[in-house]
Length: 138
Image 1 (cartoon, one colour):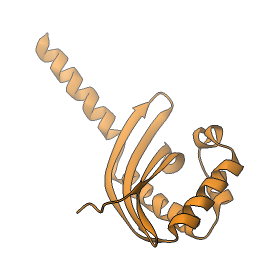
Image 2 (cartoon, one colour):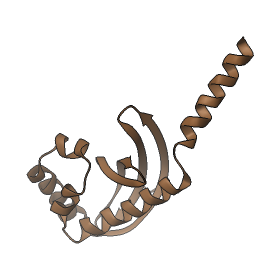
Image 3 (tube, rainbow, N blue to C red):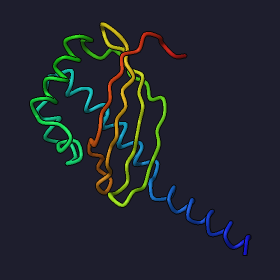
């Protein structure tokens, strides 16, 4: 019985991991690049319009725009961005991919945390967190 439970647990874990493919991570990385390009270009309303309902229900268009305008005004354009980690999570509301980037801007550094909801193979922004960093990781 114990062996059966172990096998069942392993099968469920493999199934959960198997629900997300390396293609999901690659599509999320492309979407982060697109997001950062839009932010540098000041296309904040388009970023909002293209986001998932989870994001749009959590913040108004005006507050979202003012937030990104303030970040862009304070930090300037993106210079370089590096993926630090990613996680895939399965919930009843769907598959979510969390990614953390270390980003260098003209006037400072930040950790950017993105949460993407996968709709088929298309990632939609479901959450975003920006944290100023005073050190640069290796």
